[in-house]
Amino acid sequence: MSPAPPSHVSTLSPDALEALVERVVSRIQHQAQLEAVPPDPVLRGTWQDTTALRRLVDAGATRVGTDGDAPDGSRQLARYIDHTLLKPTATRADIVKVCEEARRYGFASVCINSTWVGLVARLLDGSRVMTVCVVGFPLGAMVTVAKAAETRQAIADGAQEIDMVINIGALKGGDHDRVFDDISAVVDAAAGRPVKVILETSMLSRDEKIVGCAVSKAAGAQFVKTSTGFGGGGATVQDVALMRAVVGPQMGVKASGGVHSSADARAMIAAGATRIGASASVAIVTGGSAKGAY
Amino acid sequence: MSPAPPSHVSTLSPDALEALVERVVSRIQHQAQLEAVPPDPVLRGTWQDTTALRRLVDAGATRVGTDGDAPDGSRQLARYIDHTLLKPTATRADIVKVCEEARRYGFASVCINSTWVGLVARLLDGSRVMTVCVVGFPLGAMVTVAKAAETRQAIADGAQEIDMVINIGALKGGDHDRVFDDISAVVDAAAGRPVKVILETSMLSRDEKIVGCAVSKAAGAQFVKTSTGFGGGGATVQDVALMRAVVGPQMGVKASGGVHSSADARAMIAAGATRIGASASVAIVTGGSAKGAY
Image (cartoon, rainbow over all chains, first blue to last red; front, side):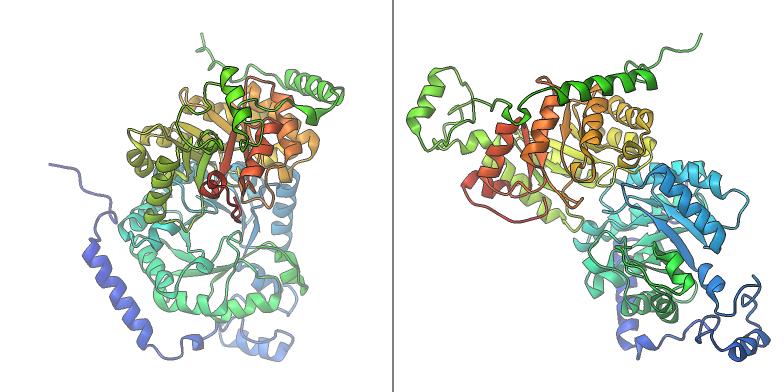
């Protein structure tokens, strides 16, 4: 008797996958007003209006004000943000700085390359801020075994979430089995920690985005994510709405790349994003705006 | 008794490394006319002059004309070129095409991301064209264990050379031990296959380039290489001459990024390059010029 296969590997035949994709494409094509996805009520509004804010709290919006900070919602917004530093030139001193900022402003996480995971996990120890590690980054063209090895090491070093890049060339070439197996191997290696799949939407057609979302969901990922910030394009409201429509309400959607201001971040959340990836995080929560690739 | 350490790991203390770097910097600073590094005689000349070509052959330049092709030296030039396709959007069909081109024009190798090594090694089987795989590409910020795993898998899949990216942030932060250990681990994982260390020169100061070369040599690499093609800058004649001066005559120097024409390639070789990385390889050997990031 051969051993039982892992729970979500090889359970999706090419035919079944094609059928899934067909169903998803069909559902999307018949769904009216994609861009009218309801905004998250917790973050709707300008937050300059404290009456409106109080009304939301009265209505049961438990996250509002629980951190006891200003009524502009900046701390609530901070909890959506993966504070991100992925530049190859980043030094230890730069990494220490983003960890300090993440603690101070209450960001959801610090998102870094795998060489920094051990340091970041130590610096964030005892805080609510998570350690998030990118894998196969930013090209996604790393062999599956190496993506899995990078994931295992990141988890061992203290990563709590994994942001992997999809095999873009395999996706564009129609090799969906390979895309599925690649994601599945990372999900297995993450051993229960959430995996986000970066699609690099600027390089994909609409159908490829849909297939990428469907395969990510089938392979056990917990989030889909728009962009690496290195691929010449970033998150758009349209892509976030499309991704949210494909994956449904249970999965996370992360908008990343080109999110420079509070207005950008709120627009993404209104379109269906549940996480924001940004390097301009401090500007976003302090009401400013910053330029940068990510 | 503890087991003996691997041959070149941990043999270089921080003090010894500092001393090495000091010696190298000192040697460079006192070396006159860096840019007057002697050109490779095999490729010196315009190659439009068949008399000069015949004179070189008579003088013992064994590689000239041995492939029986045109007297412009294009086939000799081809043997210097790693024909390169690293775009994340490359599909199987694109990879097959570069392998066919490499066989037809006699390039030194096909250089690809690790997801494609198995396919490329099969397609090149029985030819003189090598399979070259990039590792930790293009940011170099992948944890060492993952770079080693990617290297081992690439070798198992048929890679004959490894082009790894140096840990740029560790280099810039002055953490030379970490840079050394990272390269050493890949050299060990490559199990005797040559390792090229990509410095990403456009992101480094002159001193960082010198240290990067010195540490690469100390850690057992066989080549230093200028650029990934994804870092916003490419090879320059000045950088190639500097790298050649630091590593001495025994190591290889690969010029990559922005090499678009035969003239570009010959200038790099004249400055001390022994290998060229290019995606415009066909244009280079057929006398044209092409634009592109790499």
